[in-house]
Image 1 (cartoon, rainbow, N blue to C red):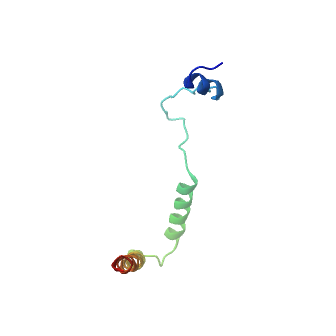
Image 2: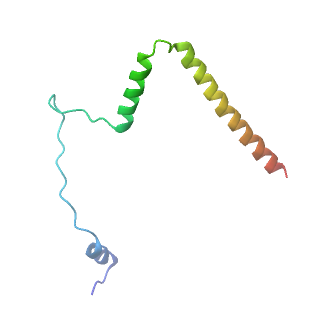
Image 3: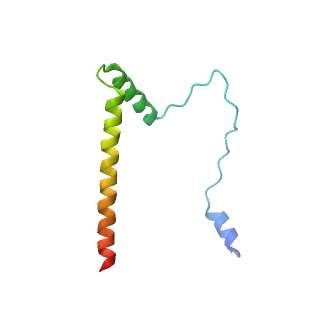
Amino acid sequence: MLQRKVDYLDAIAPKARKRTELRLANDNDAPVQSAARGLQHDIARVFAQENTWSVRRTVAIGIVFHLGVFCALGLAASGAIGHLSH
C-alpha cells in the first residue's frame, strides 16, 4: 500500500522520456522558419512588387489604424465611466 502522497504521484506519473542532448548550431544547420515568418516574408514581397506603394501610404494607414484603436478605447472608457457613475 502506498503510504505517502509522493509514492502515489510517482506510481501514476508517466515514465520520463530521455531528453535529447543540446548542441550548438553550425554552418550546416538550416534556420527555423515559422509560418508567421513565412507569411510576413510573402506579404513584404508582394508590397515590394507594387510600384504605387509608398511611405506616405504606410503612414496614412498607420494613422487610420491608431485613430480607430484610440476611438475604440475612448468609447470603452466613456462607457465604463458612465457605468461607474450610476
